Image (cartoon, rainbow, N blue to C red; front, side, top):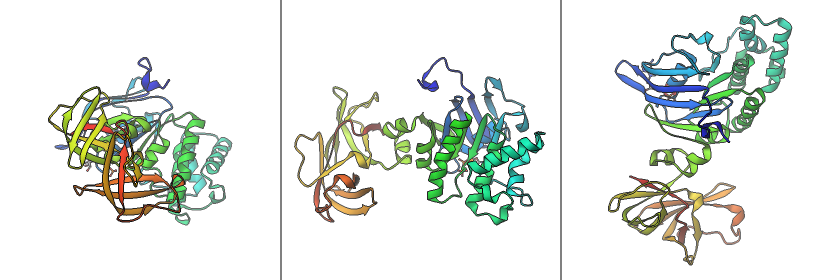
Length: 369
Ligand code: ATP
């Protein structure tokens, strides 16, 4: 089973109660995190939440104000960046403008005193990896933004650091190339047995590539888990909102019996399963449900635990699925998504139609407000 589920597993990276202040501003606050060897770990969060600061402390460009950082069991305090078995690829991946692509990639190898023949071989491997074999002799200004980013990636991987830290590594790539490169990065990480710590604000990217994700907000980690855990069981509205789309249905807690909560909301009652959370009767709570977990029908479905009636307000055809915005009686708009292959193409649901939205108690998650 996975190292993070094994209480005996030794973390490779360990942040222990790390705080980082810049003057009076706290960028990272009392943060603890363990990452394991060969993990593909992503830090996800909005701009300014402290992701880059965390990486910079790991790479040695910043020292924590408080707390300790360990790499492979060794304390990192006072260890300069070049003495750490870490390579960092920055958001602004400055390439040397006067050097060719091949020389840029070879730079770190040369500095380490690697023999010329071995350097050439490694550079060739790297060029192949990032699919830039024909561009070896070009200068950075003769490349597109995406190509430059791939050179930077090749340069960061060339030295085979045990730990590779990547700050928005795919930011400059267009959607198609970005998706391809995501899978290449995953293959690369597995092939070379590296540990990857990556910063991104793109949740889809984090979901695609990561073994685990930490979602950050204002200098703290609000949830750590596998992509499925974070998506299926977000521990707060913040996390639910940040990863994917979510509908939030509000209601007063009417009862909390048999592991279920009944919420009395403006559009009717909603029954949700309590997954370990404790919710007090009489308080206001949320039921968070993903659009694709909601069934849509023209007639009221028999025996559905939850069924809400509404009117189709907006329709977005996305190819693989259709997303409907349905307006409930209270004016609240609920988003429901259906896979197009499951629908009758001859008789699609149209604008202004009355529809029923139904879902089971387990389809969403009850959140304390
Ligand atoms: P982004 O996604 O925009 O890169 P981030 O989550 O990586 O954001 P950080 O770069 O870690 O955010 O910055 C966290 C906070 O710390 C920000 O509010 C930033 O302004 C502040 N900060 C970062 N470096 C410094 C510094 N050297 N001096 C003062 N404030 C700083």
